[in-house]
Length: 447
Image (cartoon, rainbow, N blue to C red; front, top):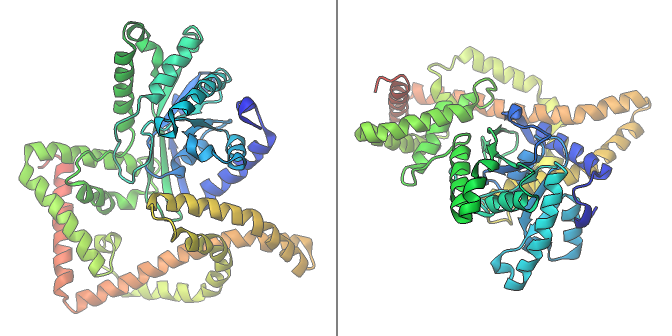
């Protein structure tokens, strides 16, 4: 599979996508929530436009929540080596040349443009990240014109018969870098490029700007967008404090709860700036104090930490400790080894991408080895396969075991702070309670 036939079906690619997608959706993330699939008609000629905050994981979020063989556009400098270029073409990625790649290289875009038309005609679905590069902020930045130019020129080159639609995509990670987080992908209603054809024929530049503005507006409407730069940290942290417990909610996803909260705060900033500033101040104070006292927001939400439940939890931890040890065979192999490599990477937005990529490669290497060992050690083949299948399940158990253990220990720590009437903890609880009350007031329309 090369550049010349990148839009064609490939059985090898389909197998790789299925395997890598299973690892992505079921192992690397604990839950993948997908909304808006009804907005996608596979018979249309589609361009997908996702926000770009988490390096490679943004592209994978679209790839593994869509059927078929999507084609991606990426910067051309990563195609310089022939071996890497052949791999990227197999992965259905096409290069886009920029001025920084050299003026003469821009001619290569003519060939790529012709190929994108083949892709759109074949109804693969073209994925373009319109912000151009990634940034680790929950904010949509200025979109590049490239995606609009591709849409208009592709339709123009085919006599305006393709009727291309752009699908805005909102992507949200409960945490950018950690394992076993929640990924939410929202597919918005399609933007009909044909609506801008009249304007495009009169003034292509105005049409590009208006389509870009429409796309930006639609993308902001389905993602977490914190416009304020001055109060970004406070608002971003407030989402975790108030809505963190809803991360796994499918019916009313945290992404939409966060959007409602942010919109309420934006209104409050205009109507009652003193209360808005108080909320932002409290958010930062609670964040710092909770970190200093080594506690988390879920522990603060609980009014009581019954000793009986904590003791029962510790008994359960003790009883299941052997299973935790067994599960760490899986975790140490696929979770800890990648951690050793990411220390060399300065950009934290690439950490998750490297963790995923390395863990997937390790899975291809070690899982067959573990299967062979299981069949070799146990005389019955069915018992060997059964033991092999328990490895990933026990690994997930061990991950949850560790989280539960930390929460139980945290419960004991909070009880100790309360019993000793720790002044710093009293301040933390007072500020947290005030913050929750204020936010509840603006959400209920009382403020």
